[in-house]
Image (cartoon, rainbow, N blue to C red; front, side):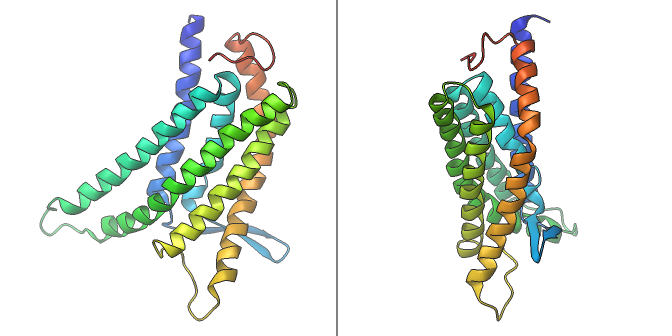
Length: 233
């Protein structure tokens, strides 16, 4: 395998994982909420579609580190187009005539929840992913290409907060798909969803620090990237 083939393959794998995770996020979306334990009396509750989402930030950070800000930004725009493609197919599936007598309730329930998730995630996605890419390169320039942990965690932790807050607020106020309990104050419930989602994503972001270091070092060697901090462009 030539050097260029290795570079193309590595980019395709990272882009594929990124886009596949985005697809799962939008299709699974808010179809189920999971309680992944608790910290003290604070439960960690996340939507099932959010499970693969932290991996997208690892992918964009790796692409930012190896290929640069422009490539990472291009991938973010492709991810937005993927969101639109999912919405289009779900919309077509709802308006085209179905087979007489075939059960349709499952599709339309998934469609309803997915529309709620995609509407929220498209806004949150753009805000969070571009925040992540911009902050990653801000910290990289500030540290002159050193302190790999700083740009990895400093960008992801902030962008995850932007994403979680936007998704929860838009999901509730625009689409009304969050399981809000009647008869209780809404604001504390929204804050709880934001805190729970962010706590899960923040722990995942911190956990990916060692894999990020390991993958960055391995990719720089395998792809023959010249020097620390250098980019393929």
